[in-house]
Length: 283
Image (cartoon, rainbow, N blue to C red):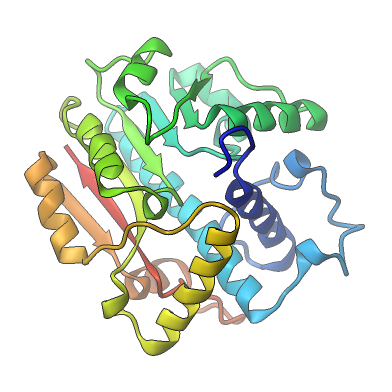
């Protein structure tokens, strides 16, 4: 991304998440603030570009809605384990903290970690939409390639002596191997019960020819936005690496597994994209 500018990718993600609220029924992911934070009006929006419904648009918005749904489902598992610290890495225009303002009453602290320019842009968007940042949400300005995540969280009031849950969506594929490992190590040394969920792009050698073509197209678009793809993984090797870092329980979900969990019996043909897996790792 550009150093002094908000992430273009974060904006595109937010727009597609908003389009999902209007175009897809039943929704995979329900976000009543998705349109407000962008200043969009569903009733006045039909025929506008943000509601394009090409096959590519359907695939992209479905993938983005799916990853938010899965992350929040997994967060609820963590909450049942008693975890009261939630860290959203690369938060962009994620609205979880604002949608769940009442969670402050049961002591859940939310830490949103992102580039300072993106966070300032988000504050502006929330202000214009009349959406308050709840007291239980703390913005943590950070650059995964240049700053220490643990130090940034500590300064923001995060307690490393208590377990925490992390979501890391749409970020890993843009980082170097060293930056990815630095973040994973930060989570791996937290108390037992801590966990992280993230999506990652599989090694192109494991993809079908059609999926590789789709990946090439995606790579061109994000590179043009200044955010090139950098990292790809073989699922079994990634799972082994996570165990070496200190994670004890690993769960990898393929597109087929995600289809079975979230898209069964849909009449509109929506399904998980074929480029990425979801990984959850618990300490």
